[in-house]
Amino acid sequence: MSEMLGGKRLQEVKDALQRLHTGEEPARVREELRQVLSKLGPEEISRLEQELVKEGVTREELQRLCDVHLELFRESLEGTRLEVPDWHPLHTLLREHELILQYTAELRSAVEALAGGNGANHERAQRVAEHILEAESHLVREENVLFPQLERQGITEPPAVMWMEHDKLRGIERRIRSLLEESPAGDKAYELLEQATALAETYTSHIYKENNILYPTALRVIPEAEWPAIRSEFDELGYCCFTPQPAPAPAPAPESRPTEAPAAGTVSLGPGELSPEELNGILNTLPVDITFVDAEDKVRYFNETKERIFVRSRSVIGRSVQQCHPQKSVHVVQRIVSEFKSGKRDVAEFWIPLEGKLVHIRYYPVRSVDGRYLGTMEVTQDIAPLKKIEGERRLLDEREED
Image (cartoon, rainbow, N blue to C red; front, top):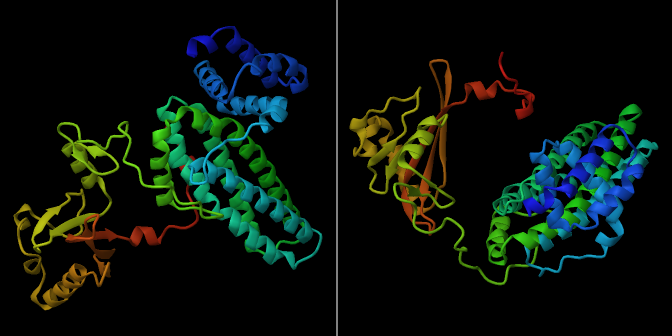
């Protein structure tokens, strides 16, 4: 595939992109792109995008190429429809797309009325906006389940471009939510209308790309045996808009997944496996102190963070948890542990000021998959710095230090 796309066809697309980049109207390169792109299906388009990135084309330019491709072939693409059963993850995503488009159109309608002076539509706009915000779970399932599956099959750039568009959608939604928290009037009402329009148009374009390029590619390249496991992961993350039909029956994990015996020298941890060195490093890097007491009330483990709040020495390992507390509070510890063991309680938490810190102490019962009590975990954290946090600081706000 790489060799086939790496020759004249790839160069023709790159030349067309360069002409678009320098400001030439898409109509002037329409026929040239038609000749090249007409020979490519959704999967080939996806792989072509990856070849272009290797050649130095940016993802922003890829978005422009995708837009032109859809403009040229919208009619023929609309004639194709994914044939998947009701329980299938792609069926769920497609149905959610339909509802998201309905909600964005209804939001724009409500905001148009609001901008026209009909204040009664404020509540209606808020209600519809909440439905749209719930679609976050749709984006999360794509980013955390579908995209990794595509990447395993060598399809890396289309998911990356779609994720860029997800972030754009989230930015618009944040602004809409902020404006709706007020009672927008005047310029604010017109800004809200601009944002609602941008959201509807962006979702329309984004959904068209996913329905006609990304999803057909996924159906083609992801092995059929993987889809029940994908559905199970979708179920764990939850849904928006509607509840899909149940899967026909649970299927065993495909052989391609790392669910067999862990590799030598590693510990199997359900979703993955780690070496003891990696596991120890992770636990010691956590910004909280952890102590684990087993089902026999014996201290079995504590992590060794750089700045522990309460001192732990290795001599405590094997000691009864009742012996680790002052006599006056032993009865409280005993009651909490007993309630954890009986299933009556799932958390106990306390907080105390200590030497300029506000120490938050939480106890949790640790249970097996089948609900059997394995022990109690204590988690301790200084939350004083967290209480001072205001506003927001996003990953994109991070800047390299000189």
